Every structure is written in C-alpha cells, then in structure tokens.
Length: 290
Figure (tube, rainbow, N blue to C red):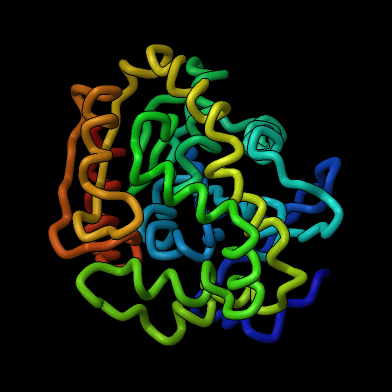
C-alpha cells in the first residue's frame, strides 16, 4: 500500500487507489463501477480528482477509468525525465490494453484532447464515442495569439515564476473558472496538492512547455482527424474560459459536424467542476444515446 499524501481528503476523493507500472514510473488510476467503459483523460494541471463528480454520477452504470499521467496526481513524478507527450499518450493506450477495455468512450479535457484522442486515431475500432471539454488538438501555426502564449509558457521566465509562485497549479485554476466563480477551498487544495513542492512540478512544467515544443506532434494528430470524424461526440464548452477561447469551437464543429454541442455561458475552463450536476446529466444522456 502506498500511503495517501497529507493533503488528500478521502471524503472528497473516495475511490480505491490502483496502480500500474510503466517503463518510466508507476501510474495511479481510478477504476470504479461496472458496465461499458468510460476513460477520462486529464490535462494541465489536472489529475483524476478533477473527474470525481462525473465518476460518482456515471459509475452506477459504467466502468469509469481515470488515470493520472506520470508527473501528475498520485502517480510517480520522475525528476530526470522529459515527459514527451507521445509517451504520456502511449501510457493511456497501454492502460486501456492492460485492463482489456473494449468499446470505450473517451472523455478528454485540456491536454487530455491530444493525449486521449491519439488513442482514438490509433484504435478507432475500439472507441464508440467522444466527450470533449474545453480542449484542443491542432497546431497553433497561423494563430498569433495562441502562438505568443505558448512561447511564453515555454520560456525560462515562466518556469522561474512557476517555481516561485506555483502559477500553473495554484494561481491558474481559480482564475480560469468562469466569471470569477471561485473554486471551493477543498477543490483548490486538491488542484494544488500534487504540485506543492517545486521538485514535483517537473512533469507539469514539461507538459506546459510542450504546448509550444510539441506543436508539430499535436498538428500531426489533427492532420489525421478524418479517422475519427464519424464518431458520436458530445462537446461541452465553458464559454468564459480565458485559456481556451470560444473560437476554438469551430475546430471541433469541423471535426464532429454531427456532435451535440453544449455551450455553457458563465462556465470557465472546468465545466465539470463548476456545474457538476448539469455536466453529469449531459454525459449520462450522451451515453444512453450510444
């Protein structure tokens, strides 16, 4: 047994911890419920905690699997590794194969878009639906504002500021919630908890930097989007997200023209955190339609 960190409140995250060994470290994941599998893929600075409301809502009728990428959540955080996104994506594929999950629905958010949907591009035969929360999966080339932002995130200045002030894990989440909607103190504690120590932010900052340095890899995924364009899809978008503007929706509408699109006015970067009951109902209805 691996002991819980002191900041983890099991009343907030009441799921049995499970572990899977990869070549680069041990991954933590949640595996709750029985039925058709739903796989949740988090982004930055997320971990499986972010999906706790959806897991509670859906696990009565579905098998909910939510891994923490290496460097995130309760997973190992190797300090001498560069966290290439294609390897993190490969770990998602590996866990799905290890658990022998068939006909999965992928739920993705933030960096979970490219990390999770890359599995759908490789194994479209084993994916029956996709749920997208504020995310992306295309190159920033030609988008001046996004390109400038990713360059800043990849800079030494941002790394220094994050090392001093924990910008990504402590400052960004409450700012990214829509229209000043404050995250609860418990949520903020658990968003920041895995990254309290600067030495535990290596993976976090590596993936933040990869928003710029791995742009060609993400763009390559978009170039293959035709592979998954006919999958049933639900897109739930927080319209007040300062990080992923509403103009990004045109890409998802292009990719999934038949998708059910839910625009959440007033919600920010975390619709499932800000409006858990509504997002839970939307995903449950989508799964029933499948």
